[in-house]
Length: 236
Image (tube, rainbow, N blue to C red; front, side, top):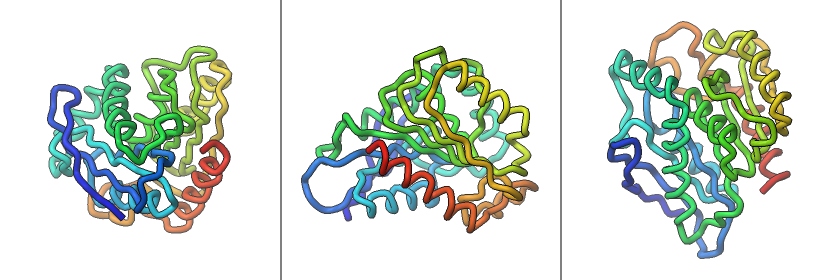
């Protein structure tokens, strides 16, 4: 397996993402991986490695800068809220990462997908809403709200939202609004709700933030990974 860091510019910042690919020079589908709100960390990188093990090429992008995890929660939240008010910047950050991925020699740029966790999942969904030519967009415990709802017929990606039923950051009304948005957009979409599951259920290190409602769930992570793989098997 080959792993390397790639520096690139986005949103007026120097970003540093991680590219992972298996051996061989053949072209293969590429998966963009967008980290949780605090920043690029071993969680997102581990998913990139797992995807490479499945035969994909993966790029774990950076949307804060420097490829670092933000320890200051107030600074992190300020950055996230700033971006939530500017959906076009969210899409541009995702597109910048996608451009890096698509430029790699091992990647078939006609077969790309995006996944993300927490705000990274929100980013993947925003890219799909904007009509970017993804085969799939997968959000793990991703925020579903948007200031720029998808227009009818605009969504090209197959969408999969994987949400904890007891996630305090994604209440039932947000799920209902997302369903109404996807119906109005005539998108090809799925939402899976995991009973008793909270936010950041895919991240074994969730407890380090010490915030109620942020809880790792091994069974939910396993089931969500399987749901993502089934979608990729179908579209990639």
